[in-house]
Image (cartoon, rainbow, N blue to C red; front, side, top):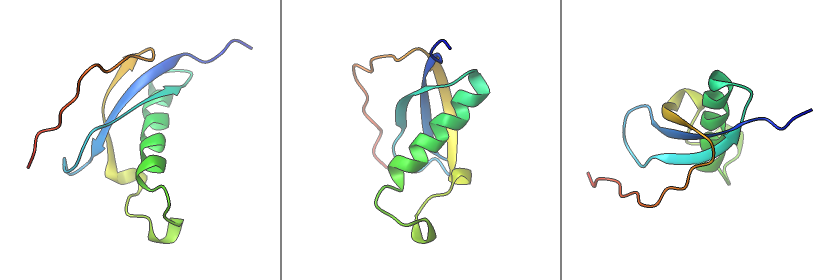
Amino acid sequence: MPPLPTFTVFCQQGDQIGTTHIAPVEAADLESAILAGREQCLSDWNGGFSPGNAPFTLDDIHCLGVAEGDINILHWEDQTD
């Protein structure tokens, strides 16, 4: 079985607060990559919390965009509030 393609997924909180999460994921297609990226973001942002008191749910995470491949981000600077 050949390896799944890699995508780079950009996510943000649905209310547009906070930083942008960027992560490579392996997925069969675009829709699967969006879900995998949102799930990876959720896991990273909720790291260390038990499921009952985690600050985020999957519904809180919006996929801003998807790039083909595992791209290198050379510079990223979020705007301050």
